[in-house]
Amino acid sequence: MLIVMDKDATKAQIQGVVAKIESLGFEAQPMPGGERVAVAVLRNPGPVDPAQFVDLPGVIQAIPVSRPYKLVSREMKREDTIIHLPGGLDVGRGHFVVIAGPCAVESETQALTIARYVKDAGARIFRGGAYKPRTSPYSYQGLGKAGLKILQKVRQETGLLTVTEAIDHDSLRLVAEYADIIQIGARNMQNFSLLRCAGRAQKPVLLKRGMYATLDEWFMAAEYIMSEGNSQVILCERGVRGIGDHARNLLDLATIPAVRRESHLPIIADPSHASGRRDLVPPLARAAVATGADGLMIEVHHEPEKALSDGAQSLYPDQFRTLMEEIRTLRPGGW
Image (cartoon, rainbow, N blue to C red):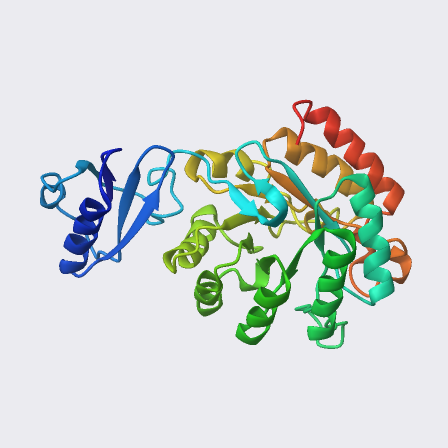
């Protein structure tokens, strides 16, 4: 249920609603909006009688929420969420962002070289894995904390914000310390204890869709993060497991408008992991922009043939620059 407060409601009146919700054994989460505050009723096992709230001072409406994902739902919050990042960079509600960089941080020289290329082409956030959950235990697993320190240097020297994946509780604490955005990868989308930990980190979280996940399952994963008080969630469509060998995964473009209809959270697309092939990245990226994505995550490597992870899907710097020019033609209103 969502308790909507009058636009002139006082802090005391809002606290009165919170106290009433808590007295019933539920959890209350105030949600400031553009004009008024709403208070979400959480952890209620069944329907809640709106009559218990409509007569409280400052309350104008009590709205039942039908979706199992409450905080994520557009029923709960009508206007699009904007994620405010350091340096005045916003994501969502018309604020488009491109994230680019290698699949994995391999060395300081490699990371800084690629960072300068992608920044010059217009990227605003640098991606690079310090921890790599790989299918094979013998594949490159990342540099760990040393990789995070390299990402920190990238930020200091280029001004690019950074995003990198956390794979467990220990790495999440370090990622939250060193990076600007915590990434939860597809393999951990339903690692519920990790999601709760990310929610308590109070850093923006980039949540990738699991390769077998339905839209509702993805939303419920985001709900875990938000239920811990962290509303700074960016959804990332990275493809689902399909059939055939023409691409690594199937980029579900229908998900982008579906997410925008059902949720207020921003959604970006990762055509690199969706395709697994360099030649498919640009057309899928353009298609994602055309369907309304709030941003893109693109893998770029200056020497992909030598990359320790996913070189086959990484664009060369000149290909990335061309793609950025094409994207600008699809968004004539600017970024």
